[in-house]
Structures are given as C-alpha cells and as structure tokens.
Image (tube, rainbow, N blue to C red; front, side, top):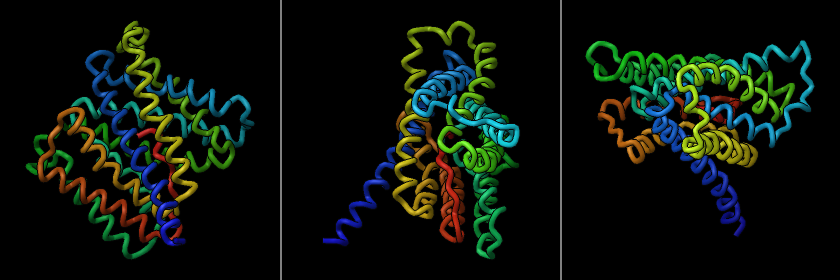
Length: 294
C-alpha cells in the first residue's frame, strides 16, 4: 500500500511536467501561426507583454527591494529573457520547431557541462556535438536547413545559458518576483521591435485571443506546473524530464504545424536529449531552472 502511494505521489508531478512541456510547445506552435499576421517580432511582443501583465498580478513585483547591488543580475536576466524569446521566434520562421528547440538546448547544456568536472561529461559533450553537427547546415550533413534560422536558434541557446546564470543570481535576491521583473524588462525590449514590424496590428481585437493563448500556454500554465514539479520531484528527475523538451517540440510541430523531420534530424534530436539527460543524471548536485521562456 505504501509503495503504491509513493508511486502515485510521484506520478502526479511527473504528469504535470509533461503537461507543462506540451503547453510550452503548443504555445510556440500557436505563436508560429501568428507570424504571417504580426511577424516573429509581434508574436514575441504578445507573449512577453501579456505575460508581464499576468505575472505582475500574480507576483506584485513592485514590492521587490531593488538595490544597486542586485539590480545588475536582474537587468541581465531580463535582457537575456527578451533576447532568447525574440531569437527563438525568429528561428521558427524558417526551421522546424523540434529542430529549433534541440539547437537552443545546447545553451543550458553547455552551462551544465561547464559547471561539472566529471570524466563522464566527455560522453555528453560528444553526444551534444554530434547532435549539433547533424542539425546545423554544415557541408552536406543538413544542407536543407536554413542557416539564418539555425544561427538564431543557436544564439537563443546562448541567451538561455546566460539567462540561467543571471537568473540564479537575481533569484537569490528577489525570489519568485524575479520572473515578473525579468519578463517586464524583456517586454520593454520586445515591444519596440514588435511595433516597428507589426504596427497597429498588435492592437487588433481579432488577434488578442491568439496573443493571450501564446502568453498563457507559453508562460502562465507551464510556469505554474513546473513550480509544482520542482517542489515535489528530486531535481535529478526534474532535469531528466526537461530533457524531453526537444521531442515534445518535434511532436507539437508535427501535429499542429504539419512539420516533418528527416531521420537524420530525429537522430540529432535524440543525441541532444541523451546528452542533456546524461549530464543531469551524472551530476552531483543538479540545479534546474524552470523552463519558463523557451
């Protein structure tokens, strides 16, 4: 009886994590459907601006104590959050969702591997490199993939890695309000680009429901569910589950957007996932950040 209760207790947060990942990638698919109407810049503006409003209601960021000592990491966190979102959506204009997520995953994976010094990490580095080589349009390996889109996804991954570094520092000072404050900063970065590209279309009542759907599916729902998962699951289990994100992205892209990946791209995604899961599984004290903005 006790064993059944233990399994059931663990199954609930795992299920919530899977729902959170499905929500994030569904949100990305909905955002991509907005590109013909407001562009990637406009979709990013919808996501961050509306998310900032929702986060403000939930976290009341005006109560945070911002000082000269802690404002630097907070600004860095917000800048990285805004850059990460914008570049990821720019990547989605020309490359499949699952491929973009896998390439972007290289950022946080690099941070995790740099912080570790175990011999086994060479295996995960090798797997990550293999996956990246198979995904990026290098020579004749992935010649069908758009170079600009892949480059944007890779830069988004770099911002994601820095987002984790700054987020750990800012979170120590502001706790849960860090996300609300960072989202507000990210929105301030995205809005000028969105307005310049989409103009008055951002104020269209017909597009507002889709914009809200992007913000809710990509931020509000997954963030809340991931917080539950992070509190109730060991960080090792949480991190390994997060490694499924590229596969969920590929599935969402296939079901919602009709994106079909080649066997080589699927193999590359599997290599990146294995590298991510392996680095978490063999780390001594894995630190996992909620995947709020990917």
